[in-house]
Length: 374
Image 1: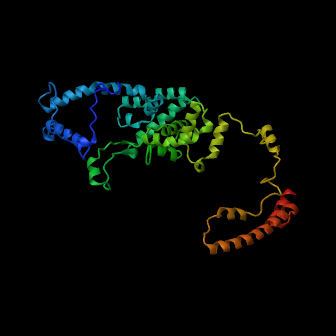
Image 2: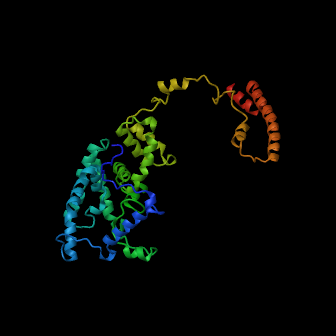
Image 3: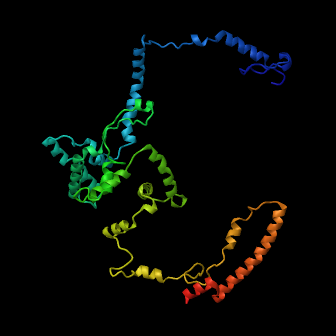
């Protein structure tokens, strides 16, 4: 097809720049202005016409909601299947939600209901999560706590009124939600945990489940904070952790107190009460494994008890820590070089002295080590 006309491909023919004049975009700009002049509609007159639209606003709102209702109902119906509420949370709520109990009703029938409130849930908790506890004992302790809360209802009741220190806007928008303080400052659980003998009957098993209930807290902030614990636990070297092990480690990391707050004696007692064995015999003698580990000796000498190779001069650590932080000025550099030379000779003397200490046991540090080793 050389020399002939090219077939029409649907594109506009090429117009040389010389034909357009000095402004190559003049033709395109003129065409755009013509289209805008013929098709543009003022914003005040722009309207969307709905087919068979109702006449009033209420009918329009009802029609729009009718369109939105089916997908929203489908979404709500699938929330429980996609985000199910754990059964243990529902059971714990039944046992510890004192606001749902008949505590202020003085009828005999209400007291009978209060006596057995949460007993079925306690049986389920013991069977599925706390087999080390006794269900009947736990029910007795739960009943003692319920009677205690009933007798001290006014002590833990919170009217949730607006405080005078709040701003006017906050006081105006505040909607009171009165009820019993279950956890937190001045609450029922704080009194049970922090007041020994507040109830005549021992309630150790009840407090064990109560502590688990407090840890089993659900808030959006917890979901954000637990991410850092997950990253620290499941590192690149621990990618093979089982799901249940990983879940337990995250739960402990997020809920355990700080290391300086842990009562080690209680942990040791609970470990022994659970049937575990410590590395000592009944006569407080070392077990075979512990005796073998204590008899093992490494072939190195550095930092070992009774070793003559204890370092006595740590000045090199200070010099290394501040190395490169001095000024770059020539005067300071020269003085620094002189100081380093002197320091080097001093260090050499000290190191040699340390060597004398190491070889002959002389000096203060050498005498102490030598005395220990001898």
